[in-house]
Length: 94
Image (cartoon, rainbow, N blue to C red; front, side, top):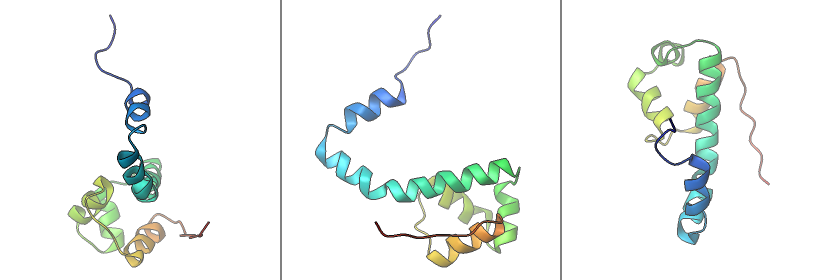
């Protein structure tokens, strides 16, 4: 029995042909790459959003909003999150 639905790669490929979508996607790409890294590290360390929030000194809802992409955090907040995970932030301009 085959799975219903369409693969992400197929949808992504189709959407990237739209210049307006592609421009918006590229604009938001750094944010979502950072979020993915934070979620991955948190998961590897078996830390819940609640525990990360306690380490950062914030509410769980702020971590949840950050990880969902609905919160545009300050650099200070991102730095606190990174340090709470035992990581450092490195920023470069290409």
